[in-house]
Image 1 (cartoon, rainbow, N blue to C red):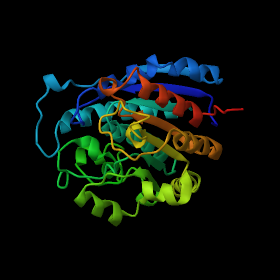
Image 2: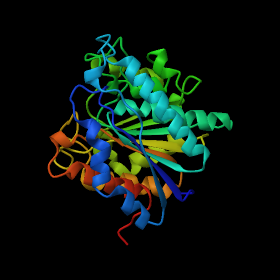
Image 3: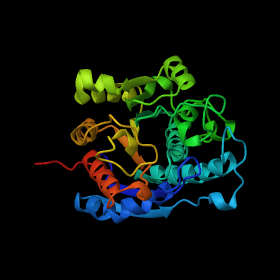
Length: 304
């Protein structure tokens, strides 16, 4: 990493998910020793605590096609401010989720920071799901299935406009890696927007090395670098059982580490988030421990 100072930001939100528990993800990642392990790599680590999140029990669910939309928008606005401020100070934001809707705030803050300097942001989205539904296409109304659509300008204005400009990221600078579960109408959104989508078949046929290099190229072309948004359900449930929406046939342990090592080698990652760690579904904090390992690989830890 070009910067030596890391800002840890927790986003304990499960308003966007259909299954409760991912609000405990930031704590699980911290318990897994993230801060101390990053310090041992030589980084200066500052933990900024958690963004304030409304609790589902105290908030109305709202419209069934975009559940908890006002509360999620308020949280993402607050998170965007924290991320933008950390970036402006020359720090590397590492966001701990929380369901994947927190990425709307993370990407919004980063995009606003780079836009103010006349630069663009790229985005690598490692996920079993495309997260490109909108309220009109979503079969569940869960906003954690919509954040990537919001980042490229599709979705409720309360979310798409968080950066102050639309889109937050140009579709041509977005790469999705690890796809294996896409809704029917959502598939049309993926195909029609120009994002670069790499499915598990692509990884099987071409290998993670080729796929992640192509993703890095797409996300870094004409940009200041890329944000890495890592959903732990991208990894196969045999390695990461504690996630909100597990899907069999995912990325292996070594493929995940190789992807992170190649991201680090590129020197182009501006920031990172790890989301959808659900301790309720986990076994002895296995998924959070793996999440910390992957963050470490992305930030420079090597076998030798």
